[in-house]
Image 1 (tube, helix red, strand yellow):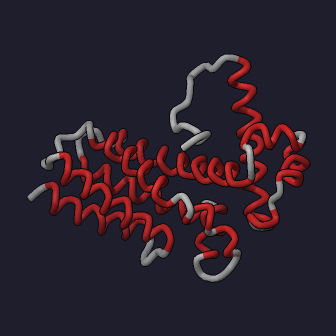
Image 2 (tube, rainbow, N blue to C red; image 1 turned 135 degrees about the vertical axis):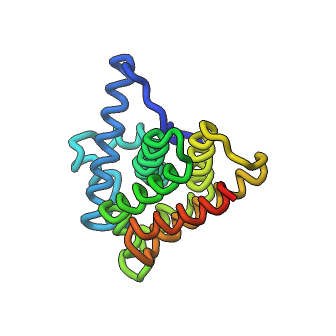
Length: 205
């Protein structure tokens, strides 16, 4: 997508790049806080500029439009969850099932504490419905990014599938986890245990 933030970060960016990143991050942080407080429909570029202490033109220069800002906000939020996923697999280099459990637990645990996501989940039950487009309009892209990260994590393991079946299995795990994010049926630990049990049956026949 044009203008979408990447999930990787430079270790020591040049001063100009660092300044641009700081400005962008500052605006996104203001947008996130404002969305949680008053709802996405109440966020305007002018109001956001005042809240972040920047000019309105600076906000437009960074994102182009409110739609561009929404895209950046959602991808930034997604990056937080994918960082948790990658950390979980790094912590279990020799045990894929344990990595799956850790990743699912980490995502669901963070989801319980994430204010923006809680607002979106509330929207799915009839409150603040203006927040839903932040996810629904980019659902395919978000799923693709999540699948790519998980496939990259699994590349470090000896997985007993060909590429086509691996991609199918990853898609099932991602969609199942997201369904529990949006509508939990149990605690993060219990759900992670359940999905790890399924993974073990598939990966350790």
